[in-house]
Amino acid sequence: MSEPCFLGVDVGTTAIKAAIYDRAGKPLAAKTQATTVSREKPGWSEQSMLTVWQTAKDCIAHVVAEIDSSCVRSIGVCGQGDGLWALDKDLNPVRNAILWNDARADDLVLGWIADGTSDRLSRYSRTANWAGTAGSAFRWLKQNEPENARRVAHVLFCKDWINFNLTGNLTTDFSDASIPFLDLLTRRYTDDAFELIDVTELKGKLPDPQPGISQHGKLRPALAAELGLEPGLPVATGAIDLAAMMTGMDLMHTGDVCLIMGTAAVVNVVIDPEPFSGQPVGATLSHPYLDKWIRVIGPQSGASAFDWFTSIHPKSLCGDDTAEIAGRMNEIARGVPPGANGVLFLPFLSGERAPFVAPHAKASFLGLTVSSTQGDMARAVMEGAAFSLKHCFRSTGTSNSGHAFLTGGGARNPLWCDIVANVIGTEISASDVSDHGLWGAAMLGAIAAGEIDPSSSLRRQEATRHHPPNPDAVGIYEDVYGVYESAIEAMRPVWDRQRAMAKQNT
Image 1 (tube, rainbow, N blue to C red):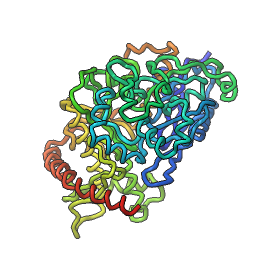
Image 2 (cartoon, one colour):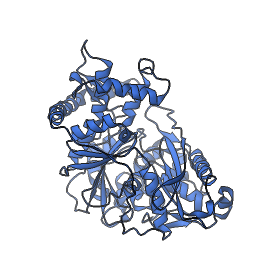
Image 3 (tube, rainbow, N blue to C red):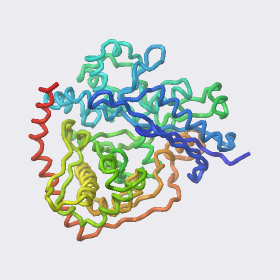
Image 4 (cartoon, rainbow, N blue to C red):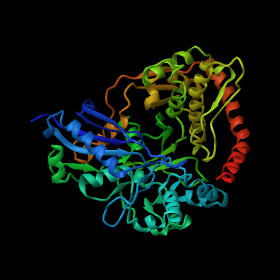
């Protein structure tokens, strides 16, 4: 019989991935398939739940076909968090999933911030609520699509939807359940949280959370036959993608820091459970299986800012495909000194949710002159995303340990890694591989099946680049960062005025 291997699935916002790994974390087969986000109206972000499942199933079938499927011992799934993934009483999707980055409930959230509701809600979830949470999205649904709201019988999260299709069971884990109704200290949903935002209809409609390493269920026999897998294969409860990513990087100790430069940028810090000490910044997740929390500060923009800039300059950047265009952007940015010759970019292309909640914030270039070049602007975009990470990191109150891990698409860009290291003033360890969430999901499955001991080190061997900070650049960036913070404060009344004008024109 072949050596045991483990199937992982990572259901992201823009792509779904599946891979089969051996015990050492080596991928034996892998498949990535792009997904489509529907943006029917400004600020909306939706996906067809049926299409998401079909794409995940196609990815699983592809990787299973490439190996001896008898070696697969388990399945683990992670996925994008938050949003509203609702089923009716017949266990069919009520409508398209409303995603984590949807902004249709912005006005509701701003009202809750103004009247103190968000402060009171944060006592339980330790999270600054935003428009893309299940509670905010359902409250919008209740007001704008009341018939759909009445049909909601079960509220899941993305990876739970995939697990339901794999096993027929409805469950979730602690990491996904953390926002916005869970009391992190008691690890139970609290009635007060539902009442605060007037969504008491959802009481009893969210599955009770389990540890991410518990068994969600067994692979359905009919589906197993269709996929070419053994029936009854253990399926883990799984975790939100951020928690799975940290699992895949073996960042499970208090004080461990993981920076993500993906579609959105994220700062993750492992912390011990703590008493409530005032309205938090960002979000707090219960660890999927340890008695720890993960402080998550996730701004809206990350590598998406890089992608946006290249998308509006495809011809001038002289590339035939995305990779070539991105490479050209790197080339012109590399020749520009730290500080981008005075050009500053505020990266709020989709508003902002951390370290401050301002869904109506706008992106902008500041400091442009007749001498400014495309290279200055390209570097400013990369620096702006790095300043956003620094802003988030400082808001955690965590002291700089002198070291952080960087993953996501941006981690494969050495220039960007250097910029992040100099902006934050800490050594960055980065890897050219970006499948840590996928590997983490596979490990959760392996642990659930009893194939891996969670108390042992879960780190795999992989080539890692180290990017130490340059003291001269650190000093320059500290000064520029001060300008960045001042620019945000100066722009707040402008954003408010733009929001008011937009509302008058609708």
